Image 1 (cartoon, rainbow, N blue to C red):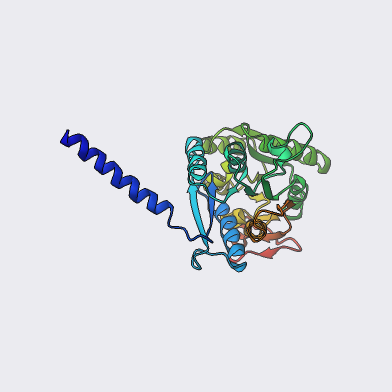
Image 2: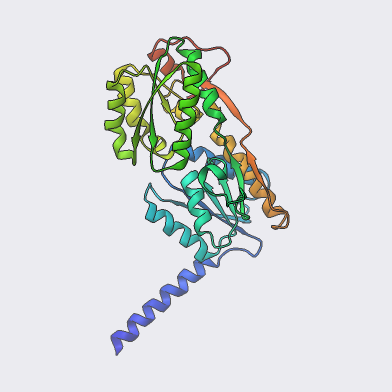
Length: 323
């Protein structure tokens, strides 16, 4: 009997402290559950931009009127689901979803909590619209279209005019990646590029698959901006550098990590744009729900060290990325 009472007392104390921890928010404090699917330096830029925008609008943890609960699933789908369950059980005011899979999971499990998306495609490309083509009512934020593929592939010709064979890895388990692959093939055919694409299902496969692409004598590697590339880019980079195959992409963060050049969305600005919408939502107290916007800021950047490695002349209109 004494043992049972002792256990009950211990549990009671634990629940008391846990409850206190969850209720320490000020009455005017907004709480955001920030959801990342993978640990990645590129996606972290979007998170930084998101927080910076909120801070500039007067919402910050330092001021005490904002609390951000960050959860990163480290590529584990079960942890991603658990993170959403935690957000819903604690009753956050807003879920910030960083990347496609984070957005999809949040929409499926938000239980009525508004969602601000970033680093993700248009909702219809992620399978998030209904039969009438309408997006979820509680979803707002910033998306990208597949137009980036046209400009990013054409960019390769600016740097390597005699390029013929472009290799890429795609995630066969993601609709977004399959849509991107279809667009790459269409654009490649229009501008005279042979596209050699191999599938992966997780980041552990990129070592062997990137080597297989190199064995097929690709001239350049095109890095699609998806979770698998983000989480295993250094593996691809190492293989390509050893084989003398330059990497091009559509995202400045991957250029900072070793790709030669990019023409596409700035992830920091992408997150910043989403943060402005989140600030609007809080200021309007949910009365005027923000809409969905296409990402606004794109840039042409190059990595001087990578360009030198492959003896590539800097293409006109590209800015050197400060490393």
